[in-house]
Image (cartoon, rainbow over all chains, first blue to last red; front, side, top):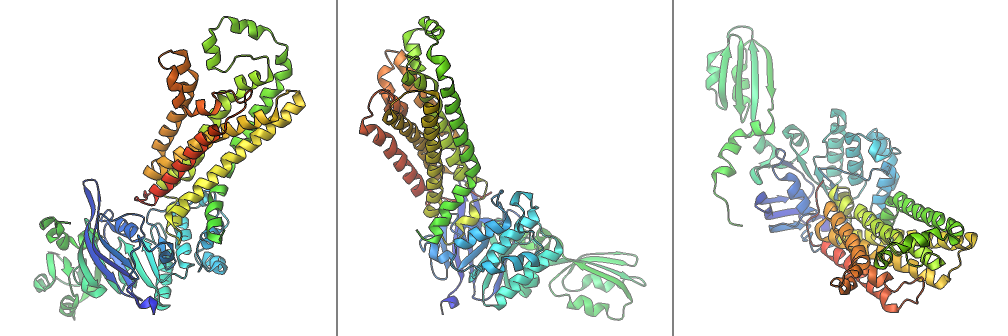
Length: 306
Length: 268
């Protein structure tokens, strides 16, 4: 029954450092058994929010509840239910990965020490090398392992794929899905939209300390811009430029480029039978993708009193 | 002690192993080498002649009065400056390494996210470092007693024990101070600055203030005066001297632990 409590709720979270407001009033709720994507460019306040959730930072204002409890006062027991991968990762340099994981295991009651070898193999990690001899990607793996070896009900992962090669990124996302399927809740931060799209059920987009968009992945996806490039066998049909969702259209001979927002369906329908030689639709970086949200977003509205 | 508390203590004990051993062995070597020169020094009269020319207060400031007795020799060469100063520096450096420096570099973060209390993590570090400082003191004491026997330096064991314990307490006091600043601020640079300044000022106040009539009464503010002002190699040590060093060490470390649980943890 206990796991059905809301794993995470953040209400009106503000965190300031002197005059600088890193987080300017965040509200979000994560439901049991979902993967919640927390997306934003670097410096948007993702890590600050996460470090407040872990009680490493003390909020300036607002409230955080983990399974209904305040992480500030609930004490060490609550963290038994939470596992964490820090964004800025530093590990004890003279320890080997195995020693470090064993040490972390001794601090938790539920930790699958027997699986250290298995997961190490899965991530192609040399467990017996000292941390200082490991690449930053390999150190990231150590931290990811430390979180996934716990039996935590809530995994808080701050850019867990940072520094990993695509194969290993994929492996981390697979682990995320596995844990979700096993009933755990995952709070996953990333500055890569496509990564979150692949695993998350719902997501929030953060910018300059505020949430500028949130909802199911499909809903938010609909707000994002994509770069479209299409090559035709003959001249570009001119009506493409006026389709819904198409902006900044340019036609150069047989090449058509534009920015697409929302559903791709009108465009795809219009292309039917048109002699398309190639289509490239790609996601720009996060700032680009949510350009309009950012433009009309928080900076246009006055500061809320906190 | 449960498994978690044991691990929280084991982490700093492991992490400071190399530094702790290096400090202990270096100080032990310093003691052995110093005592090894005693037989040659014993009959030496030239130094006494040399000291003739130096003003008396200056000689006292450097603990070099009566170089020809075993107690005078040890005081002048080891226990007036070197041993207490090294123990103070070791206390500050080791404590800084396991608290503020570990936190500021971000290496403490993954531990703090585990189901352990903030105070628990910090207290483990404090006790771990204190254990290493005590170990350094013990090694020093053993080296002193052994080399005394070998090189025929005859001095009362109880006086020697009291002196080493007092020096050790100076080390623990500075470690406690480092824990206090680390708990309060988490800034390794500040911990070092405050720790070193207090150590140097403490020595200067105890050793050099007596040279000036105006400053002389102020030597009592120095922990060095509480610890060594009565010349513990020669005279019996009053019980309050242990308390004057030990209690503040304890209180400072406790306040640091308390403060650490009440502020933001530094990010890498």
